[in-house]
Image 1 (cartoon, rainbow, N blue to C red):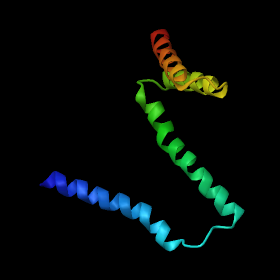
Image 2 (cartoon, rainbow, N blue to C red):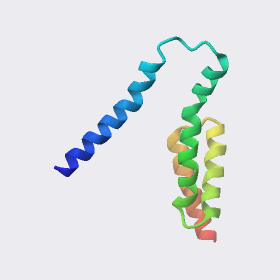
Image 3 (cartoon, rainbow, N blue to C red):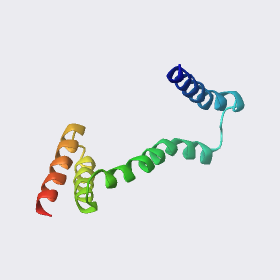
Length: 99
C-alpha cells in the first residue's frame, strides 16, 4: 500500500511539473533572450547532474579526470557513443593501474 502511495505521489508531481507551464504560458514566447535561455536549460541541468557524478564515481579524482578528458576529446571528433564510453572506461582503468 505504501509503495502505491509513493508511485501516485511521484506521478502527480511529475504531471504537475509538466502541466503547469502549459496552463500559465498560453501566449507564444517572442523574446529571443527567453527563447535562447529556455533552449539551453536542458544542457545546463544535464551538466549539473553529470559532472559531479563523474568525479565521485571512481575512487580518485585523477582517474575520473583522465576518463573525462578522453571522453571529451573523442566526442569532439564526433566518434560514436559506444567508442567514447569504452575508451573513457579504458582510460580510467589504465589510469587506475598507473596510480
